[in-house]
Length: 346
Image (cartoon, rainbow, N blue to C red; front, side):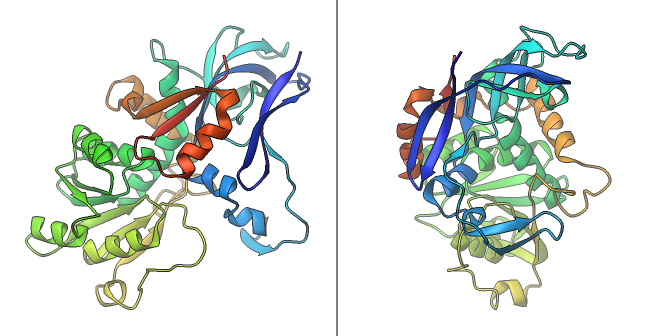
């Protein structure tokens, strides 16, 4: 039987390629992929060749990037982290997963995967399988919200209303915050209103900092969450935040920080700038010992299962996996209609 896997041969050179199936080992399950969502952040940095892991090596011990000692190991195969599938085979000693069970997890863009049984998670009863592609994006959004340490009644700016930004808007609203959503795409701002944003700002025509200061009587946002990964947006989030307030930088920023002026409001208003990243020992400041990446993901999926968050309206395209090149190109050119693009394998 032939397996299929998404392969990146170099920047913007992507295809679906055949590969042999992996053998099933102890404690493992074989999963046949139904859906695999494409990340418009991390995966685009790989696709474009801007991801720092392509130009430098990551040292797991020191947790630092160091000069790369080898060439990029193209082709990169099986990247991706938004998968849903059906268990088709289990190792003899695995008793808590069964063939026919629908599960979500991270096993990359491939038609079939062999993974440890404890890394695939049963879908909640009655949940549309397509909703489970949002487990990881939702975990990223929830990590940003937790890092913001939001409180009931806080004014919160959410910069960037892509998939993760929209989920953060919904989660911040559920936290009791008064959310101001910022983006340049009208359709995304409409989603933000439906997700509970108190105000929306078209960043192409008005200053989010001005809007937030007017809304708060001049003081500014208590917290801003920056999820676009654009340095000018991070700068505007800093400008929009109250004295000694907090900005959560949760986007995946590429290259050097053009457009970010740290000698301006950041310095004079003593802004707390914190990073949030769902992987690693501690996803965000203040979460150590309480929150892990696994807990964040399961919490988000619980919110989806109970109906507090409905991510399905964010699915803009479901395409056959063989059309992966077209799907990445669509996201790469910034098509305003594209939000969550999903590859269909079965």
